[in-house]
Image (cartoon, rainbow, N blue to C red; front, side, top):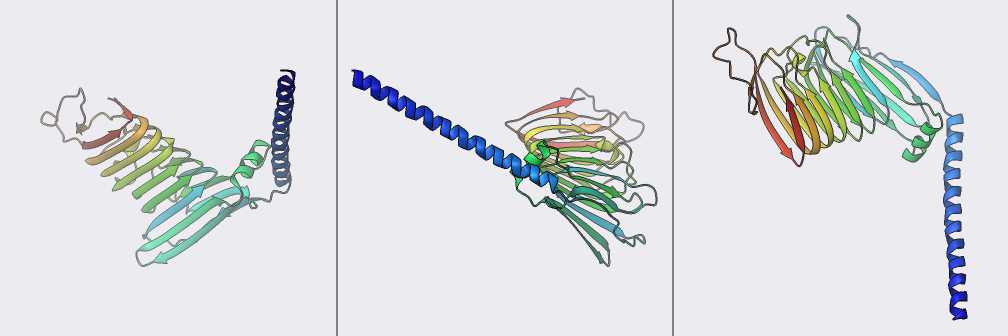
Length: 293
């Protein structure tokens, strides 16, 4: 019996030593990571860049394609008469910024790519101990018809489009947050607006001011707030697809709603002037959509 007790104490002692060894190794690894991150912060090469692509408008339309990841991003209108401009601040050792401009008979295409080149864990630790955060501001010309495409991954994007002249717009984001605001009517009704998202959240407000003839929202795993209020001037086909998420849909006034169960009365025959009709197709898979009238 005594031998059994002695053996148990011996194995308990070995087990404790093993646990302490593991804890020590983990602590050492954490120290090495933080030490490397601290050295990385001290050796940062912070760059402030302003990009002003030489675009000859001449009444021709353009297309802006933005591929952005791992940072804080803002897209907004430039001042009247101003051209396309990008203002960027980032660490050259951790991120890379590239641009490309192509001109063709019908207009021009401008592409901007910003992405992380360093290790994701090291980048995160550098942020915790005071490393430079990456910030990109993109200013869009308000006097030129534009197509806009924006892809955002592992970042936060805030997009303001009020007053711009946009024909088709497509947004896609994942593993981050996205805010879209259209606080005043566009120059012309938008032909198409697409929002796709996964593993994140987004808020879109004032979409009626874009008055898109076709609106597509495809959302997976996260939360959304979709506000359709604003100055609708054309009919719209609206498709909403949700999966494993929650959402809130704010309906506008002074329009006709088709395809949703609401408490409104169909006033198309009684209205003095025809009102825009919004026709909905909603698919909801294991999610919850709240409709606010």
